[in-house]
Length: 99
Image (cartoon, rainbow, N blue to C red; front, side, top):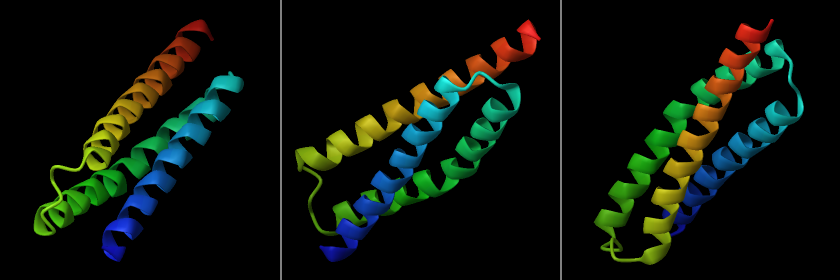
């Protein structure tokens, strides 16, 4: 169970980094900042999905697939991930078009 807690903590840290990137990019309307934020976002995609897959395997192995917390974690991490990625892409395109 402690391994599941560590993986959940790592997932929450990556999501926190996504939120910090989102806030920083939303406040700043610079092309370089948005491009850097999008590149950091893309770099963090692979570790997040690997951790979500590892958590899914651990949940299945420990017979915890009916717990609501894990279902909510999977759902909201995906929603936050899609929203921030879409926002960064649209903001970058807007900044390229307007300059």
